[in-house]
Amino acid sequence: MLDTADLIPALHTTFGFSAFRGVQEQVVRRVLGGQSTLAVMPTGAGKSLTYQLPATLLPGTCVVISPLIALMHDQLRSAEANGIRAASLTSADANREETIDRFRAGGLDLLYVAPERASQPHFRELLGAGQISFFAIDEAHCVSEWGHDFRPDYRALRPLMDSFGSVPRLALTATADAHTRADVLAQLGIPGDGLVIAGFDRPNIRYVISHRDSGFQQLRDLLKQQPGPGIVYAPTRRQVEDLAARLAEATGRRVLPYHAGLPVEERAANQAAFVASEDMVMAATVAFGMGIDKPDVRFVAHAGMPKSIESYYQETGRAGRDGDDALAVMFWAAKDFALARERLSELDESRRASERARLDALAMLVESPTCRRAMLLRHFGEDPPQACGNCDNCLEAPGVADGSVVAQKLLSAAYRTGQSFGIGHLEKVLVGASDDRVVQRGHDRLSVFGIASAEEARLIKPVARALQARGALVANEHGGLMLSGDARAILKGELPLAVVLPPAKGRRRSRGEAVANPVGNPLFEALRALRRELATEAGIPPYVIFHDATLREMATRRPASLAELGAIGGVGARKLEAYGDAFLSVIRQH
Ligand code: ADP
Ligand code: ZN
Image 1 (tube, protein in one colour):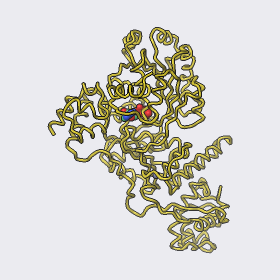
Image 2 (cartoon, protein in one colour; image 1 turned 135 degrees about the vertical axis):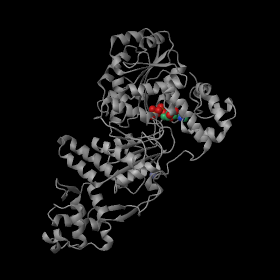
Image 3 (cartoon, helix red, strand yellow; image 1 turned 135 degrees about the horizontal axis):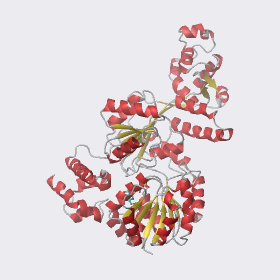
Image 4 (tube, protein in one colour; image 1 turned 45 degrees about the vertical axis):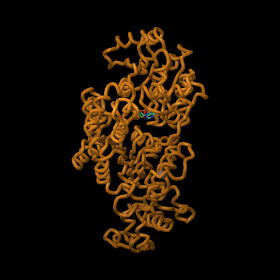
């Protein structure tokens, strides 16, 4: 078998990279050694390289199973741009006959197919007529009912692969959860010792979690600070459309909607526009997901609370796959938790406890004054350092106050007023503001009237948020706050309550600095303009030609020859040949 020293030249020639990342090398070595493997790697870790590189080195064709045509064509484009001999066999491909001939003649490194094809006898015959180097199963969690994207067609893969028993398998997924992993191994017939797990950290993503006070304005400011491509996730279709229109209007940027209720053509067009764009924003529901293989997404914003930590991590993971700085911002409100907790009662008894645990974990994350990344990684079973230096709380420690006494006062005010008033009214009672409604109800005569000092008054809202997030206060259908969960223990002083104080007015330092590209560097801008021109001409997204990082390196190192240009990260042999002269001439002119 080849050793690493032999692999680096191939890595460099094909992809222009000078080193492997993380577990890539381990996975590639296993594949070259014929060992079946399940590689669990977070988004952006570079999964495609782990099958594409061996595919170019081994005799025969690597058969890649991928769940979505858009995803397949994306991968195909990138592979071809690197000079890899690849084709796809789907209902959307007009050149199927040609592809079949190429496969039979041994002229393909990669053959992409959709799982539906796997169960067809035709297809099995076809595979029998060529030489297969190995099977690569992308988005392998789709084979498991435990995963979030179960695809019954993936179940036909095992019988197909079993009929080519000696051909090794490489399954790939970003799914973190242990249950799903075990199931994927079993469903695809990969031995347990074939599991390779990469660390889940995405160090280039900066996590910022803020209370949603002005909502729309916070998003508008974010879009003004972040000029690159971004995704804004909103919980409902209506909110998506509303945000797309209002954000476009308020910022002058191109913001398009994406949700499952839009006509198929419009959805596809909006997605294609986003993939090709260097500055567009997509307002979307979580239906905008697996198909996005765009590496240069600079920010992902959540306009409302995500469903769980797992979904949050997956959704934010779509930012910064290219390794450049990226930002994940969540705007949450106590109301989001109140709603989610209310919905628990509609669930089957058997699912309630686990759903409640999901919400509690999210509440801990948003209310925490400590490192967000550490909390996230601990949630996925890792043992990270206490501070990451790249999240809001690490960059600027939030104020923390003991909210226990205020919590007791607030809970008793809610109790004494009959558990049917919202936070606005309770606050008035506590600070002793005798407006009509307070007087009418006789709440000015209660013992809790005016018991909060001016100092404490400041804490009422943050305390209410914390109580709602952890489920000690829940809203009834009229918005009245009722005691629940830990309320009794907190009221009796048995459980302390620490609250995080929002930063003083003005912007937090941690927001909106995640811009990796030099601003106003004429050479960099000229290189980008050339890239845009070449991309439009070829009908491919700009990032398929070169990533921003590659252009940045060109702008600083100013290579003067093809040999010097070829030493820059991301410039493989094929791209050097195709684009080298054009980029060198722009560099010479500046
Ligand atoms: P995933 O599918 O795991 O999300 P991709 O395969 O799309 O990740 O790779 C993410 C990005 O990382 C790609 O744009 C790719 O060019 C880049 N990349 C992959 N491997 C390397 C490497 N060894 N060195 C530098 N960049 C890499
Ligand atoms: Zn941190």
